[in-house]
Image 1 (cartoon, helix red, strand yellow):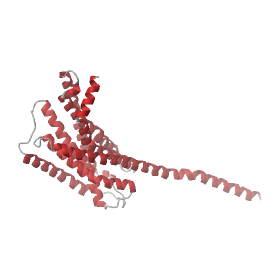
Image 2 (image 1 turned 45 degrees about the vertical axis):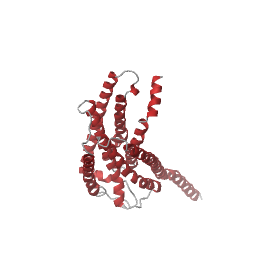
Image 3 (image 1 turned 90 degrees about the vertical axis):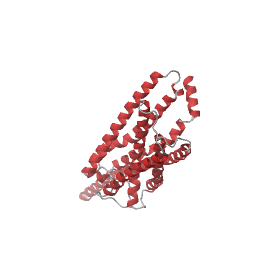
Image 4 (image 1 turned 60 degrees about the vertical axis):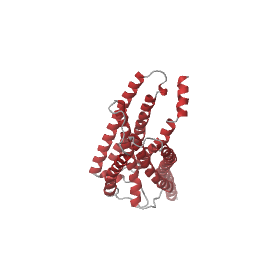
Length: 319
């Protein structure tokens, strides 16, 4: 009798221990599920804002370009910026569908195209920003009074050459490196992190990161210097001077470079070293999503360039 009671007590204790262990064993999957949901909600929010604001900006800027000087190098850069934003925005609905359903149904080749498009958009946008800012620097230091093409044909030929060069560089990278060395699950997309186990991929990424950070820091230093020089030569309300507003526009583009592109590249340094940690995939996707906010540049550029807004700000500064 005593032995049977002892056995019953031992069984009850073991059952209590199992009950205590059960929540702890299920908490980790539950936490992972919640973290994935939170990441997908963040990505859906980011790309929804990007898509709506980007489409509005592209439409508005397209009408404004009809009134601008077609021979200006700056105008040509803005036209190309509108094109690259438009190409990227076409792929955004597919991203939203994937993040909402958590399943990719469009095939692996198209997944590579959509995934590679965000990098294509980022670096081509960065290139056109550089052209815009370098021209501003040339004009400011009076190396050039204005930078224009002699004919419209020259502007078209230059744009085509830039696009051909970009396609020749980007397309082979997508075909040769994207999803070639890693093993990825069917129905999943935007998770090509296993490619970072390849030493050539690591080397290329480190070089790109170093060049990107160096260029942004150099442009920021030059812009701060130019703004300081302009402020010293102007009197009265700064906002009423066209030269000061022009420098603010340049600073605006540099701010986009720092906010949109730097976080992704700085995080990539850590991500390359810990590519096997699946928990970092969502963070990497969010950082890449932040680069898409550069699509809002045309929308914000139109708003900040409006006469009504300038008059209101000028009135506030005068008061």
